[in-house]
Image 1 (cartoon, one colour):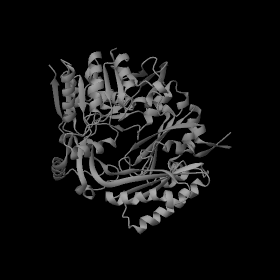
Image 2 (tube, each protein chain N blue to C red):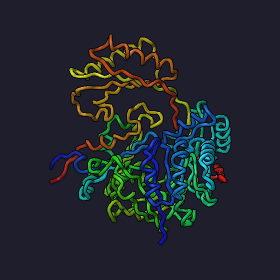
Image 3 (cartoon, helix red, strand yellow):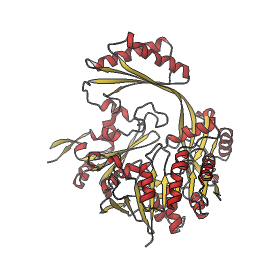
Length: 106
Length: 453
């Protein structure tokens, strides 16, 4: 068992719609998709973000592109047109998710 | 099988001009589409029009003066949403420019009717509510009453049909207001291939191709996780989609331009602003990308296929813009030794001073740039060499904000040690967006085509 940060096995792209941030998490190699699917659950992601994500987190699976998509509500301080955040569109949310650690079975 | 080539000229406002010109001159495209409006751009444009009825467009001057003549010369049709909240005014500017530049025979079209401001807008909203259209917030379900006295504009997201309509009338330069971005690539495909309005799979393919193309450099190596592996980012090329009649497409770019198109760049863009992959909503169709396939078929050439569609929704997404107070910001900088501690002390001082002056604010935010202003509580606790303190204040009254941020300057002399680089961003009015739904039959776009003789 070893711990890895998601940044070592995945890459991400962040998007926004209103106060909703979505992060697409893509395996850097298709062999990592199954472990991402198993370990990176919506609950874990919500816990990881703590106070940054005030609403629910929904996870969608895209096995055809080896990706998971996390749709996170209440994540952008009210959204692009209302937020006081420097990163009002949540461009750096993907990077923040890539900080998360999971356990990899050897 | 017939194919057409569609270019992308812009993904935001402002975007780079030279890659757009490169696509027009060297891309061998039949059409080039310009998305100049992010979600948050529209309320700003609506406010412009509210305050100045002749304004509310985005990039019309550059479009009319720098891009339109190049398109006309190269036989490329231009579609742009730079009409913003005032496509008719934008159209007039384009017509004047075409006349002045002697572009005889050019046909310029505007599509409006999706938008209203001021009193017209309030009347329209009252009419809709009288008919039982609730105009609730699409995400929270909140009722419109909470913002009703602050509304300034209403815009409905139109789809491909009106654009196809003006293409059928021979328009070469098309200026729209608030369409869904993807419609600007779906429409030429519909027009060229004669896709029926109920051919859900083809429409879905067009919408997803539009989704891939709508952010310019995003799919050709821009904003890419492996940015350091992207060749010649300095001369990034914008994307081109070679679309087949059966809805399959190859995403590529001008040969020799910088950047790259790979399955990985395409995957990142696919996920951008996506929610449920089985139900990607657009005015024209609901797209399903759960069986989408990307395949690298050549250098900087990715084939996309496998997209399916479901019947379009009965409602169209709309955005109501409303006044939401003012926001001002001030920045101050500190270096080693003890940069963070000095910034923290400044925060303490300013919190006390805001109390003393009785500042009535909706929200006051303190950020530590270089430390945790982007990742917040997820940032590692590492002592920075230098830090920028940012204070953002949202309040109902402009003068209160100005008065509050002024004191930070004085702390150069009366605050912590070696505070420097203080600057501020003057309070500006915040116009917020209220996303909602409007029944399709309530919207009648207006199409106008003008020929310059």
